[in-house]
Length: 294
Image 1 (spheres, rainbow, N blue to C red):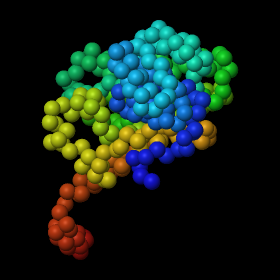
Image 2 (image 1 turned 120 degrees about the vertical axis):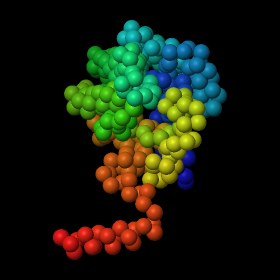
Image 3 (image 1 turned 180 degrees about the vertical axis):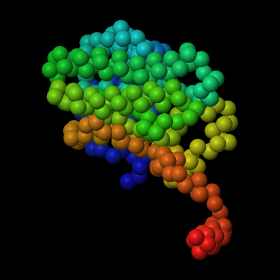
Image 4 (image 1 turned 135 degrees about the vertical axis):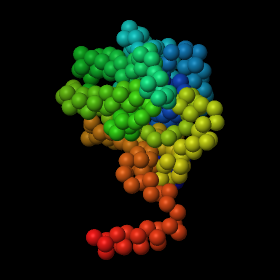
């Protein structure tokens, strides 16, 4: 068994209806494919209907599962409500909301306009809020139990990060909402959890974050102690577990899956990784001599 293979048994999500925002590409599409393989039905949305329709056909061909595709701009509450209504018309219920839609780019913060900030905040924070309120209120009003909201955040939602400040602010808000509603809405039978992925290459996101040959020059995977990027199946395995009935006691948790990347960046002395092996004898000797002088 390898990490590139599915983890759960084939019927682990049988009968579940899972809504995925930004489900027409990237990680959302990869997670959706695995959910289908486990017996779930999907409702995916994105701003471009032709893109999600294409993803629907591809996913159904690959898995034999059922996918509903819809155009939805998560920044607009009325479109989110329409997406939910379409799901209920199609399937009669919805069990899981996966808030995956996002936007991000790298830039020195002083170069950003007000509109550039809003472009990220409106999708990531406000979009997640819009979807969570719509689906949550439906579940509460209809007294539906055993429902799950899974939010995709980042490791820098906790630590902050330079050069992606709008995203860091937005994801931090999503993480706070995850933990807050995990407590407040548990009484309604709604669980909230989050995943903080490290580098999982996707064509769209990486092209925006590391345009041109910047990704090749910076070698992002070298910032990961395991010296590799994540495989989409690894993330899909974790997401499937968290939305399944195998995780009913997990609530309010954020699970990091990044090969140790954020820990390497967090340690004050982690830069010493760059010290060549032959230099450590000198460092040890210099340290002992400094101790004797004191």
